[in-house]
Picture (cartoon, rainbow, N blue to C red):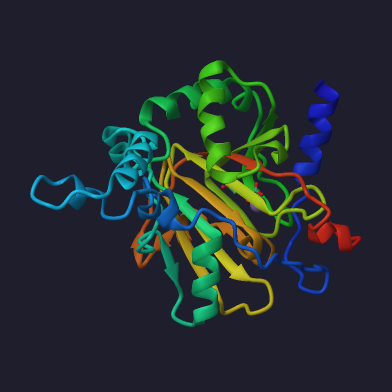
Length: 301
Ligand code: OGA
Ligand code: MN
């Protein structure tokens, strides 16, 4: 078990610095990510058309067969309370949490906003505490690594976990449900990355050989700024504000064609405002590469 863990651990650290020539990029045209509107409670399309006027006393009644159809549709909807509570977490519809640098093209805005989603308040403070308690004993046994400046990460320690307590598993199941529409494809190991207050994650693209088209991260203990930069068009830069307790989901174009980095303390600004960065723990889940993944058509990882 430990050996398997070590092996995965090694693989996960193999992050690939962006090098357009080395990367053979294959981006699916299909965008199956939860569009912001589809994660905001019940979509309008699910409700029977004109249901509410028809139920009003002063309106003409709908024919019987339509009334039955409406009743059946209403019965299949979750109760109103559930629908209201589904308003949180909220997808970043207005892009309050994404900052497109002025040189960004319309294409960048469209692609990044549909392939990079931030769900704020994805977990509660109590859930954050559950996860912290679970990973801390393992993380704090390790020393932060500051030595290798050429590595993709500086000032970090990390572990891989595949077994979680019941409480933590329930939280992670929710993460998977939001991030991986086909939950069977998630890599069995979850990567836990602890970045020291002074730590940075330098620009890189995650290994295409070991990881599929979706990467998501649950952010604990600190806010941070993640910067995406197009691997070829270097002036296409987008910053994402990753609030403590948020979940980000990065996929397809944002995952393959943009490097991602977590800015260091000194550079940590969002829309000109400083973002205080403390010790940060992220719980990163990735899916398995498939036949369609770029790795299948290239020898590079
Ligand atoms: C990584 C990475 C991001 C994060 O480990 O490859 O990019 O949110 N992590 O910690
Ligand atoms: Mn990464």
